[in-house]
Amino acid sequence: MTSTLRTTKKVLSIQSHVIHGYVGNKAATFPLQYRGWDVDVLNTVQFSNHPGYAHFTGFKCSTEELVEIVEKGLVGALDIKYDAVLSGYLPNVQALQKMAGIVGRMCEEDDNVQWVLDPVLGDNGRLYVEEQCVAVYQDIMHRSKIFLATPNQFEMELLVGMPIRTLDDAKRGFEQFHEKFPRVTRVVVTSLELSDFSNDNVYVVAGFDSSLSDEVFFYKIPKINATFSGSGDLISALLTDSLLNGHGPIQQPLSTSLGQVLWLVTTILQKTYELNVVDRVPHDEAIRIKDLKLIQCKDILKRNLVPSIGKPETIKI
Amino acid sequence: MPRLLATQSHVVHGYVGNKAATFPLQCLGWDVDCCNSVQFSNHTGYGLDKVFGTITDETDLKQLLSGLFDNFPRDYQALLSGYLPNKNSVRCMGTYYAKFKEENPEIIWLMDPVMGDEGQLYVSEDVIPEYRKIALSPKQLVDIITPNQFELEILYGEEIKTKEHLKKALEKLHRTIPVIIVTSCDCKMFDDQDFIYCVASMKGKTPVVYRVPFIDSYFTGVGDLFSALLLDRVYKILSNPTTTLEFEDQVNNVLNVIQKVLNVTRSYTSGKINAKMGSALEMKEMELRIIESRDIYETININEKDYVYTRL
Image (cartoon, rainbow over all chains, first blue to last red; front, side, top):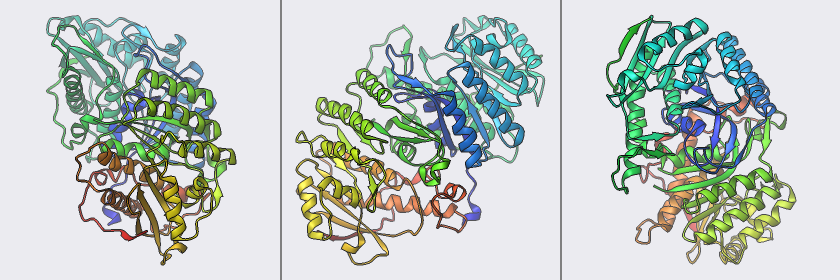
């Protein structure tokens, strides 16, 4: 019986923790676990809830604590072999540098470890971290072998150093990105507002896989009349699963994985929206949804054969 | 959908404390808010020189709980508390949970008074009066406790050697606590040492003794999984006045789920199931297979064994 059991894939997820709600590790852990991953959860902060609420309390973990847990504990004493490391919010420059150093070494020493890096800097034109972190992330992405990076629009702009407003900007952004960070094999920009589509009520999710082609591909996603916290964190986690779960015999192309992940995420966002507007009078104003309804969406997450949101469009670079 | 707050330990790797409780409860449809009383690399069975991380200090714990209850003063249907590292953290949890319970008397609080096992304390002695204060409070704050026999004796204040004595202890504690589950009773009180005995007692009913096979290996986190599942099963009774679910069956169901999780866990080990405490590589193999057991938590009354042994 033992021989027929699959071995469980292992991921180390280094992100923020909120007690209430679903962002950072709370957004990543349950979906990954429910899809069969053994998730080692390293929390970089512990907050009562995310800062999108008017009030929150909590603390940031010290750099020494984070370093010791990984270096002396997980890698040292326990010698755990990970299939992936998913890194997100790190609270300061020093923690970012040290942790990136450790994860970088883990990947260099063991080819099996794939690094999925969400370069958490900010959103909608506002930085969440010290400004210096931009340069630190640029340096990390220049030096390290990274399987996938998942910036949002603002983070992509900061990393490549140019504004992205149109499809043409996006194309040049990806060119710049690949030139600056050739060791980052794949990149997905998790949400792009582009003027080309401003009348169509859609946003764009775009990706590039330098191991496969010189084409940028993108999906146009109909907007829901709401904003959500945690949707980017959910995309990074589900892409990790889709690309690295080992269910299929061969590595699935990024465009295929992204199409499936976007189906999952938009279905979850739609259900979250519906559960939030049940008791409301219909109105035109976009509502701000603070917490994804991940638990209520477990049947969506359980799907083995995930459909795709559609066919991607492509642009040559 | 129900929501609960769980305050206990967090390990990065492995499944004890909040890591053992959260996923099963989420699979059962609970929104689980986890307040972590520590963040350690792994549990202490790996050997104390192989545990890294920190304890959430009292000031931080206070701020987290006060921030949480200020923002969400009516959001929880249940509270769970497990391992807390010291006197201050127990008192802090007790203070905030008590306040929430007084403001929301219909909610259910399960307290696992984690202090030690088999005659040995693994917290410092000054934790004892804090747990006693909460458990014995005339305000009847806690709805369910899940001590092992040693912890029951501490709360009761005397050693328990006979079934009659056990019954008396339960009666006394029922003055302030409606549901008491003693997760492992001294087998000398019963007959056969190849089994584990568990006693479930609901105020006003005859206590039921369950007997489950003793698995000769070292698994950590079973108690934490037990408390989490029990909270779900008892919530389903206490929150629904017209329920047909029976307490006795719900506890039996939890014991069945635990046995199935242990079987899944064993099927993944490489034959050796007698891991030594302090051996990191062996401990790693003995982590509960909480994730691989995903589809077990919800199974109700499918191929169930009846573990009821006797009544007190």
